[in-house]
Image (cartoon, rainbow over all chains, first blue to last red; front, side):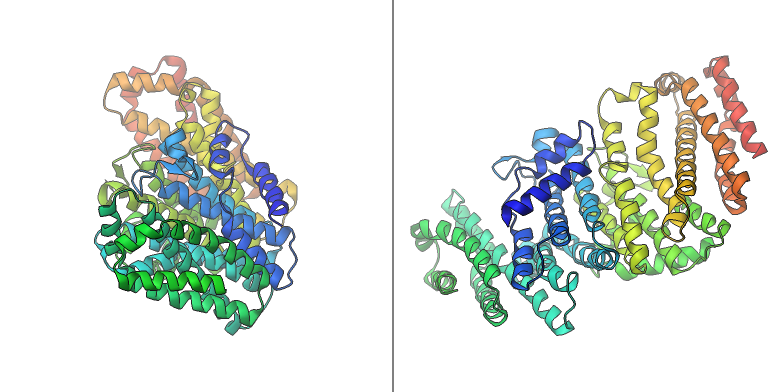
Length: 301
Length: 301
């Protein structure tokens, strides 16, 4: 499924890029793609729900990945997170310049909506609603704004709100699209799929923060950042969210989705366990326990 | 019509902004609004075509103005055109900071698409096609990229290509929306309305450049910039485009639209004639002639 989607994704994007020097900037930002977690999640849920993997589901999955890529381009800019590297290479603004990364981000944001226009009218209209509400001023963008506002990083409960908006909204589009755009289900079911995306988003963000922390070089920084993240509370939240994901998957018999999630969590697990020593040195005992109980939960998943 | 639209525009935007400190940034960027030329053009064409001024046409007109506003926020950033002032006040990044202006721009871009989702399915889907294609990577964004690439500013024919993409595409969305989204007309008619937007876009951009040149303080700069713009060729192109607009309006009996265009052109005319002396001092005779023949054309319009 991965290679079939990737072929569609690559071909349809190339068709829609300008015939100019500037297309190199898009190309650099989009290819080779990252983990493709969001489109793969969307497509495995389609499979679990017996919805076809076709132009329609591929178009929404592409739109989602393109949208995600634009956020990375803008987030990496000096006035935002100021990151020089992304996906193992120079970030787009480091490679080409700031206005190039800014404009390519704007281009990708529009391109993401262009992919939704490949759907038949009714589905296009639903997709437009879902994307613009979840990823617009009251969704993803507000999460980025909270993230950059000063003073917020110290408030753990607020951090969760940031992750909910900044990270989980994109994942929720992946979990909602199959039921909201491609099939009609009850509002109750919609709520459950939205909740799945929220939980998954928070789980991935927190694990991601954790694995990033572990990879920090200085021990002082590691401790300082752990303090900032308030890991006790964060890990309690994480456990709670992971429980929901597991219950959802069992209840809805989502085998493809379950296997996809396992694959990604295993990767994070590997990073964490490889660094177990540093963890035990730096985390107070009451913090070590929830981390490894979470990892045990993954293994049972 | 202006005040009815403005009431809709203000109310519906406020409904869709986040309940957070960040909403001040959107508010600052959007209000008070500019000339509203694009939405007014769209709505006067609706009137001329006997299409209702209702939630549908107002939603598209709002989406267009919001989209235009996002481009201003991003264009003004230091890595782009680096403008400190916009609409008689500090530009958004000067007032709040760069990430605030960048994010608010991204938010407005998404919000623009959110307004299209207020349309019934079929129209929403057509609007999605029109906006994403005209304003995306092969449209407006490519115009901005050409504009910022070095070395291009000296080529007049290339400048027209920039204006066509960067300025005219937004105006073309205004002229196409009434016929492409809100009614069904022949492909031949679509082409004429698209052409109208192109001509209007070029006319406004060139007059705008001219009035900006006139307001330049130093005479040397004035002459230098005139040289860069290659006004002889530019004015020839301008005359050609203005002729098309006049023919279109006569042929299609677009009285409302004609009166709207006259209003805007008169304003530009006033600036130019007030500075007639400086013009005659700085423009070589063969350049003065086309400028004033154009102004005569407006008066006859």
